[in-house]
Image (cartoon, rainbow, N blue to C red; front, side, top):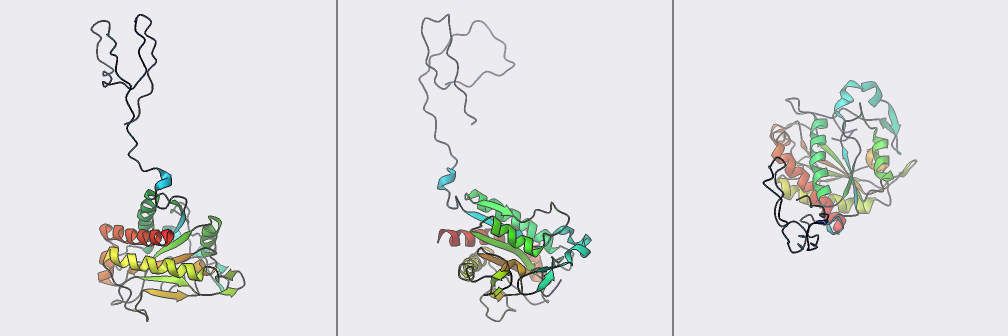
Length: 290
């Protein structure tokens, strides 16, 4: 959930054609026979075999330029950090989010069995990264648990801005009450105050969010949150620094409610997390190719 939610075959190289004892000058095409094993013993002077020049087979890898997201930059923001629990003083320091000052970061929530939101978001983010990179996108993570805590919410926004990202998705899970189930996507509200001005990203962020919500539902088979008024799975907020301070299209995805046993069973299942990553990737792809 958000930082300030209601909870807490290698190619053979060319052969050198210098057989001085031969009366025939051989061409330097690809070898037609596999090389002998390194420990094979010679049984006499080898007789050179003249083979026609082989035409190289085309590479099986799709060229980078033809991949659907080639040239696009996506920033993935794994919510929270596994180390936040040990750095309460640092993450409680307040930062400017444009409309007010709020905590640098929070610990996030967890399932009743102790599976943390920070572990969940990092796992889904890794899966999402791999899916997007396979389509040619340049992917930047705001962190990869390589730092002791954070980053703070203002730095998370700044990373997306400085990357000139085409899209930013912050991955989360909610910590609402039992019986509250489903996913939702948080969109930036129109804010123009202090360091925050979202006027240029409200429209494209909604388009991104709608695509992510639609594909997330298709990929995971889950429904939009039953505890939000609209029932659309879309929620507009102006109290999140990660959205307020963004200058590029950005949304938060709350993949489910970790405090509900049925949702928790999904969130702790690796196969379901792969579906969640696929749904987010499909939504991002639809948005970027639109």
